[in-house]
Structures are given as structure tokens and as C-alpha cells.
Amino acid sequence: MPVIAVIGAQWGDEGKGKVVDLLAEKAGVVVRFSGGDNAGHTIVNHYGEFGLHLVPSGIFYPGVTCIIGNGVAVNPAVLLGEIDHLREKGVDTANLFVSDRAHLIMPYHTLLDGLEEERRGGKAIGTTRKGIGPAFADKTARLGIRVGDLLDKESFLERLRSILEGKNAILTKVYEAEPLSLDEVYRQYCSYGERLAPMVRETVALLAEAVDSGKLVILEGAQGALLDPDFGTYPYTTSSSPLAGEGSLGTGLGPTRIDRVLGIFKAYCTRVGGGPMPTELADATGDMIRERAHEYGTTTGRPRRCGWFDGVAARFSSRINGLTNLALTRLDVLDELPSLKICVGYKVGGETISHFPASIATLERCQPIYEELKGWQSPTSDIRDYEKLPAQAKQYVARLEEIVSCPVSIISVGARREQTIHKAPIL
Ligand code: GDP
Ligand code: IMO
Ligand code: MG
Image (tube, rainbow, N blue to C red; front, side, top):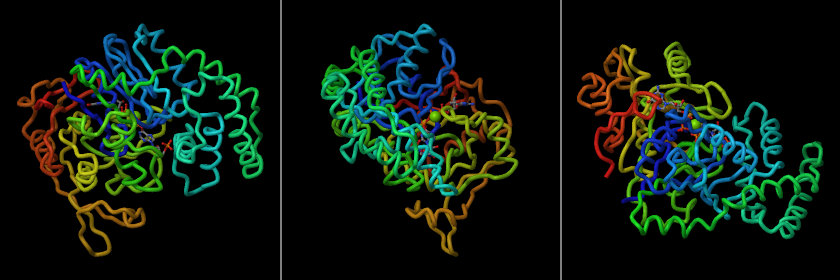
């Protein structure tokens, strides 16, 4: 059995939760490898509807081991709340483990995320304010505190004391905010540590053993490729890599062990937060998509910006992720439209370009060049067999495959697990 990385290939919210929940049925292990509780992965199955922020989307199968990998920034209060909620709904969380190397989101991270956003004013990134940027900055600056650190209270106190001194100086002197109490933060995080302790593991060996014994391992991404700090619309990005490569770095599974990279795309585009989005529709069609699809953020409730499928961005995303297979979600959302557009190039400064520019100033000026296809104008949510899709829907899917140069394996026509068309095997 292989290792499959399942990643968001646009700006996030592509339906990673739905697809991982679906594929996890046959898995031995599901491991989240990046992001933090900025993620919101929606799953609709026989247990109900869930918006998971940290717990991997394989949790609904009691036999599946779920790991929060070293690449995730963990807010322990959010994680413990999520576990409690799952247990209340009858979901077994006995097989959930957290890497001792995962970094912690501390109270100063969430405070600073909000304060930094306020300071940016009109140029705010539109972050989720979950402390993600400050936590990953601290990881890189070697100022982080890791999950495993909570298990040794004495050395945790020493580390927290020295780090908090610096953070309080920033909070009070730069932002004129109240300082945090060492005693309160220490006590609170010790109590989180006590509850998390039974779940904390050295997860590299756990994962390697699962792969060696032939189990299917799913590496669950968060966010989407165009929010990557290197390749996304920097600085309007997140702060950890959502790319397939991070599936290796964020879990400790070497890159040669990843067999397939499944890129999830919506049949159109959405983005939440600031930053360029060349195919955004600030018109009635955009509003129609938002309302029909209920495009509001799972984590923050903010309305998502909606637009046509961006083939230029999709091709770029395929390259930087090394996609081997595609999953196309929310095809049903387009059911009523008389015609559909796909962006196949950009016009900028009188020039036609086919690459995704690095500069956001250039991206802001890009005018999409569209190809128009006929809509199918009939319902698809109850279709389970690819051949039964309306001809125009099949043409739309085939054109996307051509543009991205990658075959579609899965088509999703509704939020529920069973509302899925298996077009071609992933392996
Ligand atoms: P994720 O962050 O990538 O897991 O995606 P989100 O959960 O944030 O957003 C995806 C939304 O689309 C959720 O509300 C899902 O329930 C919903 N969804 C997923 N697949 C489909 C689909 O094929 N059709 C429709 N109508 N909704 C879908
Ligand atoms: P999932 O996993 C969509 C966006 C935020 C903001 C930018 C930076 O559900 O697809 P951050 O809080 O990470 O510093 O915010 O990234 N963002 C997401 N957008 N889906 C997500 O996760 C996102 N996580 C972060 O809106 O624009
Ligand atoms: Mg989401």
C-alpha cells in the first residue's frame, strides 16, 4: 500500500476534509503535516458535521491511527476542545497521537497575530488571527516551545521564563499592551501538558513502521498551494508550507516514500483574506456561487471571494506539488450556470503570459483570458457514475485535465462522503 499526500491546490478550502475522510476508510495512518488551527476541514458523515482544525480527518475510523505531525503548530486549548467535542459525538479518539516535535501556539502568538494585523491597517493580510505567523516565525527564530517540552515541567518553566521576558517587552513597549503573567501561562500549559501527555509520541518511528508494514498512509495537507510562503502570493500567504514537499518535512517521512500526490481543486476558485486573485468575480455570478455553495470560512465565518477556475494558477500548483492525480470538488455548485469560464492565460501590460507571476503588483494587474464552455444546467449531486454525468460536465472536467496535464481521479458532487464519483483509480 502506498503513501498518498492529499493537498489543497488553490487558496485553501478545496475540500481536503471530505476527500481525506473518504480515502481514510482503507488507511492505516492519517497524518496532518502543516498549518495549525487556521485550517478548518469540514466532514459530513454518519457521525454528523464537523469542522476539524487540528485533528486529522481520518479520526472517524476507529482502526485508523491519526497523527498530528511535527510540521503542525498546535494550540493545545483548541486541540483538547476538539477532542472533547469528538468524544461527545461518539467518535473514538484513542488512536490519536501528537508529535513531540510539533511547536505550540502560545498566548502571545495569538495576541501578536491580532496586534500585527491591526498595525498593518489597510494592508492587513486578513489572517485567521490564530497565532500562526508568530508561531512559525518563532520556530524559525529558535524561540519556539514544542509539545514535548511540556513533559518536563522544570525545563519548560526555564524556557518559558526567558522567552516570555522578550515577548512581554514587545507587547508592552511596541504595542502598549498588557504583559502576560509567567505564572498563569505556566500553570495553564502544564495542565494542557498533563492532558496531552498520553498522546505525545516520537511519531517518526510510528509512521515509518506503518509504511514498512504496507499500510496505506495519507499525508493530510492544510491550506492551499497558493498560500505557500515561497510560491504563493507573498506576503498574502500563510506561514507554513501547504505543498506536498512539506508532507515529508512535516512528518519525518523521507520524500522518496511518497508515491502519489493528490491535488484537490474546487471546480471554480475561492479565496478568503487579502491578496490578489485574478479570476475573482465581484458580480452577481460571484454572489450566486457564494450563496449556492455557502462559501463562508469554516474557521472564521468570513465570506469567501469566488471566481472562475484559474488554469494558469492550477498548472503552476501542479508543478510545485508534483501532482499525480486530481480530485475535483463542488462540481454540483456549477449545475445551474448556462456557461462557464476557465482562465487559460493572463494579459498584463499589453503582453500575454502563461506563468503565475511572483510579484503581487503584477498579479493585481493581470487580466484573465477566458475560454468559455457551455454549462450543463442539470443536477449532478445524485450521480455516482462518471459516464452518467451530462456531456457538458464531462467536457468541463476533460478540459481541466488537459490544462493541468493531470488525470482526475475523484469528482465530488456534494459534501457527504457518498456524494463522490470515482473516475479513475489513484494507483
Ligand atoms: P478544506 O479546508 O479543504 O477541508 O475545505 P472546507 O471544509 O473549508 O470547505 C469545503 C466546503 O465544501 C465544506 O463546507 C464542505 O462540506 C463542502 N464540500 C466539499 N465537497 C463538496 C462538494 O462536492 N459539493 C458541495 N456542494 N460541497 C462540498
Ligand atoms: P484550510 O486548511 C483558506 C488564509 C487566511 C489568510 C492567510 C494567512 O481550511 O484550507 P494565517 O492565519 O494562516 O496566518 O492567514 O491564509 N488561510 C486560509 N484560507 N483555508 C485555510 O485553511 C486557511 N488557512 C489560512 O485567510 O488569508
Ligand atoms: Mg477549510
